[in-house]
Length: 168
Ligand code: SF4
Image 1 (cartoon, protein in one colour):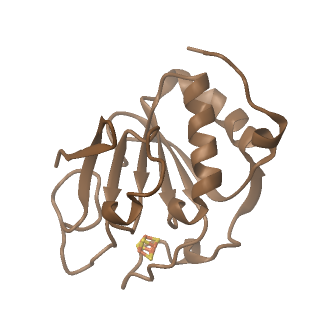
Image 2 (tube, rainbow, N blue to C red):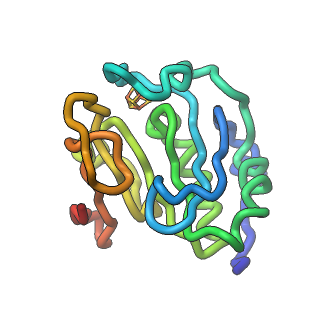
């Protein structure tokens, strides 16, 4: 459902470096999702599954408005959008601008994957993020739990007022 449209010109033109978009994923958060892979990561996890996405210049630069336009085709078919990478937190200001704008337009949830721990993000505005999977990928801690690469990673739900609850 389309809600109010009120992007300023400045917000429309905010730039993001994006390596790719995957549609119809059922393994990157609840339900059916479109996954955006943001370029750049500093965590350098051993056996990183996305080594090429550690490069901050991988992929292409696109504006918040271009990304929103690209995702319009998906909205009817998805439960939410997943922010992956790389580490989307490395482009936090632009990423959160995108999240705020797309949530003003559509009733969808947003999940963030980050190699940082949630405590590292406590000074950032996470109001519009619904789920977080946090922590580096540790190849020697395999997991059978949903949606994650290693067992140390924790899956959080935003329960409001700046609080997060571990749900798995
Ligand atoms: S956080 Fe992800 S992309 Fe970054 S080094 Fe670790 S596994 Fe690779």
